[in-house]
Image (cartoon, rainbow, N blue to C red; front, side):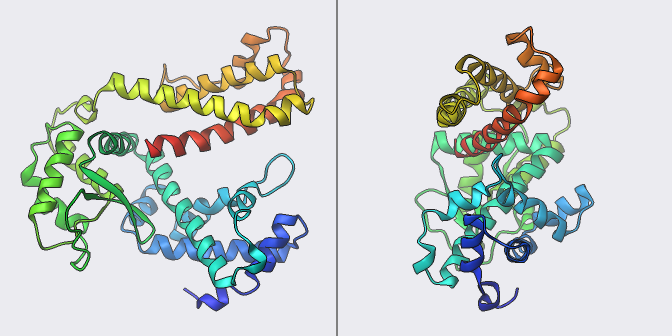
Length: 341
């Protein structure tokens, strides 16, 4: 990675110009290049990158661009809303550029971690289910603590020495050592309990382990047990579905409230149609995160059920951009809330 002073050169000036909408293409490209350098370096340190490269046929540089793309998405008014939301809490004019770089690095690392979860979810739905259920079980049982180490989401057994001075527990070592402690018939909470006991009793490696690595470990153990059903990876299918539905409903209510002033009070759409939007959008979120009959959700067809007289041309002209933009907000917030629960 280039020296920090090279990465941070003109960083304050470039970000301020982008936030003000007065930037040049060179300033934008420079910020993208710095973000990409940070993302690429972070991906190079992760053992999971090789798997993603082989699955998607992309190199690490392309994966880095994929992960940071969301940072540079614009809203309907052309503003870089994520950069604005992230940096508006920082006094850029009085902050040293090295500190601004540290804040940017934190944002980029967060997007890389989110990108890895997203790409794994797309490529491997079973692993995505296991990871989500691990997080739910940890939140419920409190036998592990979620921590961040070197910018990566990790877990560590609660109330014990972390042994950070010891070598890291790489996936091959963990697989070899832990496989004899599990039968492959355990549900996620029991598997986590066994992993907690194993990590506490061993004294060779650091007890902090990456969350994705744990998910891959559990999946490999489940797959080695032939005929083991998907239900074995569930805590309680009904509980998970109901909990997810509640979160999605809360997300819709929050995003609707947040955008009411802009769309309804601003005269862009009437209140009735705005309510219809969120009926449709909540159904779309449930289809994506809980599942239905597997059919693709058509926002047009769904909205037409609430507005039978609406034509396709009217939808394209008056509603498509608005409802799709709101769906992007909801997807982002839903992923954030589901990961936090």
